[in-house]
Length: 224
Image (cartoon, rainbow, N blue to C red; front, side, top):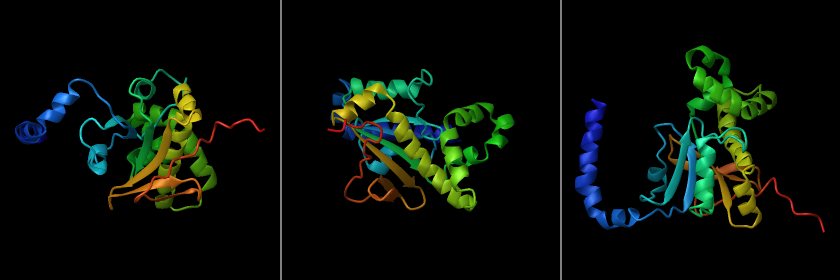
């Protein structure tokens, strides 16, 4: 039974990991000071702390179906509240939007008509907030194979969320002052590799020893 295994895991955590790192958890009980806002999918195969090898307290994580960030003003979303809190109150200076291979949300987005009856809430979520990605992919890459279309949709969805992030006042302000950096990543489940968007070449490249920050695409300084 899965819940029994989870309880066994809780006991294992308390008796071993927690005991060894008790001092860390004592420090965390007085407040958090994460270094990165990590926005990713709810998919059970994605574990931000595991794939980045980050200890408790380093990542402020926002997760939902399809790692989607509604544009500012679209609705009073938990995503928006989390973004605002992490930047304004916690002072986070690095934001990662991380999609992943074989994303079920992107598969559903490309065949969205099939979701309306079976999963109306998922349908509404993707129809409202995934439409820019769906339209871009189907209008420009309709002759590609289904596997290639899915890969493109996953990549374009991450870039769309970066653009949506830039609509938030706190994000725009910190980008303008150089106090914030955005990163667009894709985690490949089958290889364990992470690909980051390199704007200088306009594509995702394997992430090894240096980051590829996404340049601020929306804010432009006045011409002199």
